[in-house]
Image 1 (spheres, protein in one colour):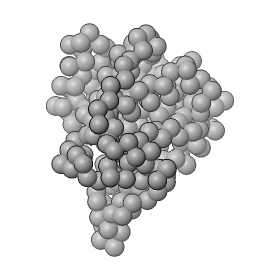
Image 2 (cartoon, rainbow, N blue to C red; image 1 turned 45 degrees about the vertical axis):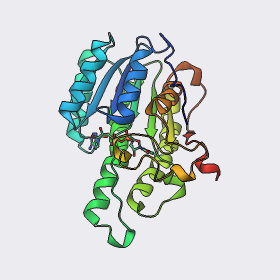
Image 3 (cartoon, helix red, strand yellow; image 1 turned 180 degrees about the horizontal axis):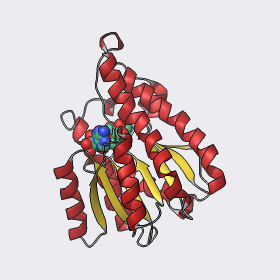
Image 4 (cartoon, helix red, strand yellow; image 1 turned 90 degrees about the vertical axis):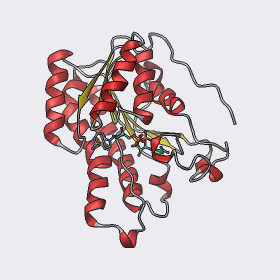
Length: 254
Ligand SMILES: NC(=O)c1ccc[n+]([C@@H]2O[C@H](COP(=O)([O-])OP(=O)(O)OC[C@H]3O[C@@H](n4cnc5c(N)ncnc54)[C@H](O)[C@@H]3O)[C@@H](O)[C@H]2O)c1
């Protein structure tokens, strides 16, 4: 089924500084393209350094403002280094998109503790560290907005995804709590809840996985998630905080 990719709203995020974790590829790269296309200065952070640099260079070659930094979201020292870098260069952070995530499909009975801990460390602790470390810079913004990328598998659960689903459900509680605690500083915190999205993770099974259970009959293009992120971080969503934006082609309504 074809669809027209959503287009950026020029200038809507002018003069905003955005940090996107997992920005080297997939949804993170689409978020970077969209936010930069709306005028933001975008910092892509990832552990895939070559791919991340290439993605940033591609954006710059289109006349957009983008740069790449190495950041393992599970490493507190990496967050501190990126905090110092942003502080020195901009003195604030307007937009934080905690998008980095990993998945490992294993029945609960066979899930190793090591694998469980790694998934929680990246998907859940990564977002906690990001918000805790960047809070002083978000406070320095008059438009502070955070998006945490959950998944429909968080609320629903899914066979083979115990650690992943737990991490993504945990992100929803973390998001609501951060929204409450950050509201007095005018910082909004919301969760993005994607259904199936066409990214390198599931390139091997274009019509498999969640597609048969998705009423719209396809996975999302990453640009469709990027449009939702752009909405959540821009002033059109100025009264939206502590909520979940579900972008799943109807998966949850089955
Ligand atoms: N693709 C889907 O169907 C789908 C559905 C729901 C939710 N999600 C979530 O969307 C987010 C983006 O995933 P995607 O679909 O673009 O997949 P992806 O694998 O293409 O992108 C994930 C990115 O995160 C990066 N990353 C992994 N570990 C990291 C770490 N420790 N520190 C920094 N970066 C790290 C990867 O290198 C990669 O660039 C993830 O949180 C994922 O769980 C994806």
